[in-house]
Image (cartoon, rainbow, N blue to C red; front, side, top):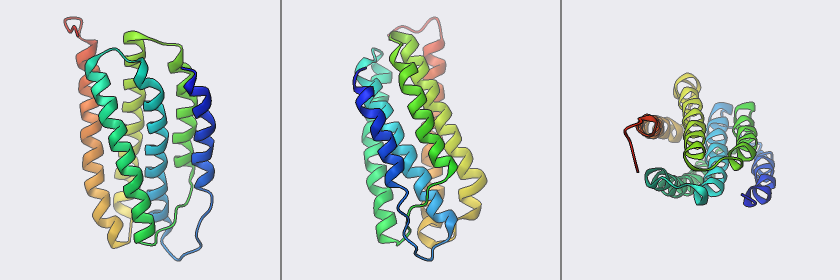
Length: 181
């Protein structure tokens, strides 16, 4: 996973690009909601790009391929919302946490292979999705104020919950000793 060494600086750039905040009068929670989601997708995109080529299980490979497409689409969507709705990005500790955990996960994942890599990757993915869904439930849904974000947040939360549930189901399936791929 030598690619990881090239991608670690990119995670720093992901965070660094978020620090230029427009001074527009927009509720902080809407700015933070966009930023946290954008950074989540950027960080996990990098993890997926690094881990993907080293996976062996066809279901995990398919999940990563779908995830790569999804992350790319969500990054474009979130940037579009920021530009079109005039909601600037605002970094937070939570968005920084997604970057930090991805930076920590890459070296650990690079030492693994086979089912150990797949299990560690899926658990990392499930944990990150659970963190994001929790943020939706406790912070984003009750707090966003702009019409754009009020419309986007519940739909995105439902989509993320399905991803989380599908990831947990795959973890359960792969942990079954009777499963073979």
